[in-house]
Amino acid sequence: MYLHLYLQQVRDVLVWKLDGLSEYDARRPLTPTGTNLLGLVKHLTGNEFGYFGEVFDRPAHAGEWLVDRTQSEDFLARPEETREDIIAQYKRSWEHADATIAALDLDSPGKVPHFPEGMRDVTLQWMLVHMITETCRHAGHADIVRELIDGRAGYHPTVSNLPDGWSEFHDRVEIAAREAARITGDRTRDT
Image 1 (cartoon, rainbow, N blue to C red):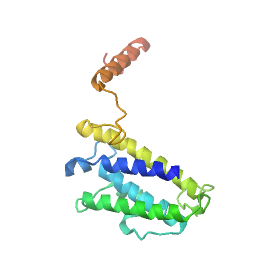
Image 2: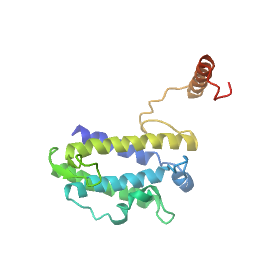
Image 3: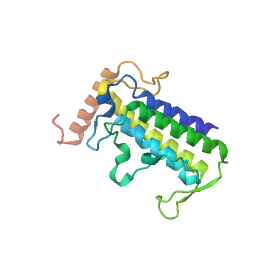
Image 4: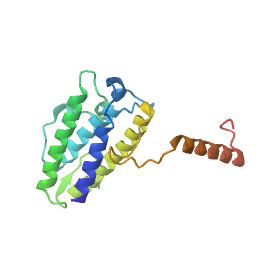
């Protein structure tokens, strides 16, 4: 099923974004909101267990991976949690999700209690699209965070999708931004 294929591709990319990083770089926050690579993986682990488990009455007994999301704890890779354990748990969430995907039809009903009223009744197809969207969103975050850490960027380990000459392109973008600011009289940036 193509939906499942797309989900697996982006799952793999998220794990790949951790390759070759130090423990600190895998965890360090690079945005004011604390976005970090290992935290993104941990967050998506809980999402997979929840959206393909509890939503379809197929709980995974994932315990601490389904924490109180009001405190953003699912984005925090605690010091005692190893990178290997977090990645292994993420892969276990895939196995559980994959079993749900294999066992149910796309139109199988589920219920998401935290969705807005009127949107809580869902289907497996809806949850697949939702999880692909959620995972792609966080893969985009991971792309930016990884680029900030060491400059490595790209879509996939085997397909970069990035042309040569990025520094020249960056310079062209900066020149265009400064010129647009000059033309429009934007004084928020010293041109």
